[in-house]
Length: 340
Image (tube, rainbow, N blue to C red; front, side, top):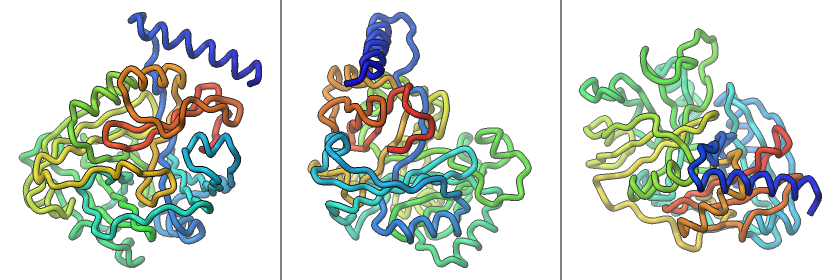
């Protein structure tokens, strides 16, 4: 291990101690940097995200070797990663060239707890839906839904779920005046503006808050309870009633918790899920990795990596939340712009 990494380890350990004794240290997760999405055909995926959704391709690279095998918990792996940008936000398309994982269950539903999507903000919902129809996307909602005015936190928001060519769920979202980040209301000629959040289905909001808020330091930015015909048609789940909690780090897209109060029929993440399975996504963050490792141990949460790994000049660690969703934590000293 290099002197630089050892110095970083010592500094992060001091940060973990300061946090543990209540001295007001910064949150463990400083920012959400990108969302990792697993695909089966990189060329097809890049073509779709750039030509249909307006993303800009920044980088395409491959990684392999023991350090990555231990990071992802996949022996003999070779991973292709394409980093794409939309507005200020990024995604990482991930294709495991070896070994190939399992396909997502064909009967996956929006209330299954492996569900995750990214919410792409659009300047005009009617134009966005027409454009997506023109490019023959697969519907996951019956069509765009305008959430009702009786719901003070969600009323006036319009949304539509669809799938990318690999079956990954995506959402286009439009905020009315007075809702959402002010940047989404800046005048723009672009149709697809950026990513507001990634949404994950959880079994118990309180348990998820113990992990994301209390252990990792994300703040609660808002909450609502959504139900009714519009919500059912948006999620394509009959009788859907959701408790929604929005979380944010200091920078980057939010993390939205979706707890289905009804129906309680969503299936749990398979306990043997691996990083190369098609339903695998990851939230990529900048974090105090040693402090995160300590927090995970205290909370008896789940590791993907066996512990912090020295990767690309810094420490990285992949962990799972209480429902099995994955987070990649990279130390603050990592090279700017480095993908997983």
